[in-house]
Image (cartoon, rainbow, N blue to C red; front, side, top):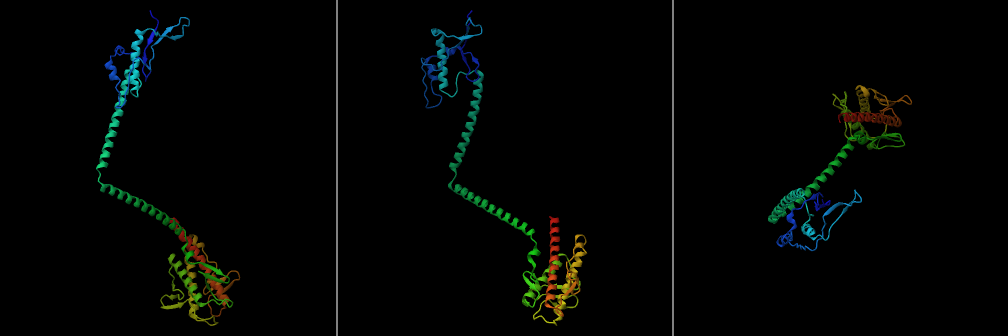
Length: 371
């Protein structure tokens, strides 16, 4: 018994041994010529049975006899009868492999799988080609007017994108401004109360007169107009309606109406400082001081934190008490000195500044509670 076992070819995909059909050993010239035709147009392939590039002789395994576990690959180059069919088959696979992107030979299972894959790829390629042709046809048939309309529409869309971006920027800026305004103290911004030496000031207007600094009555009257406007605004914000008087802010000619008497008390002057002065101006300043005292009483009756609110200078009729000296400073000009009158007005503005601060903080707290 011949101990040699011959293995002819293996599948180029799965590398499993395959058994060739005997018919592949004998191919006539016509069959070889047809197989040599190129698969793709424009390609040429030649087959020469005498030149075999991929000739792989059959593998023969035999026991060497000296080493029971060693095997030697043996071939008989002189055995023409057996090697000629092998050359023909190898040349055939070489021809087919060089004529396509697929290496041969293939087993039946790998061939079926490859055909399925090629069918799928072909179907997808055909669909893509069909879609491309339809798109090309639609673009070719599109009139110039439609192209112009599309270009104009694109320009309009671009303008709308730029407009929307501008609106977003404006909205962002407005929101930032709104947040700043919410945190702004309107009263402190509108009514700035401070001091300038011996004078109390409101919006940089001095309220009072001194022998060494004879402030004009135009400035004093304007300062009184700002002071009346401030107290009237504070009262309106806390819902206070004075019992005996009504404040009438009217610039440098502001005044106070006496409720039920149809009488006006001026809060402006027009002459020099005298020992005997117009009693109507003194009555107006006294009425204003009573309104400040009523404002304090109204705030203190609100309860809670409001009950702890107290003006720094106590008001007693037409006087303001100085806690440092326990003296009472009259707000009237009659029987008074310019220094005392000016100091009383400075204490009056200080009380109003405290009231302004309290109302502003109360309004800010209520706003925060609502948000």
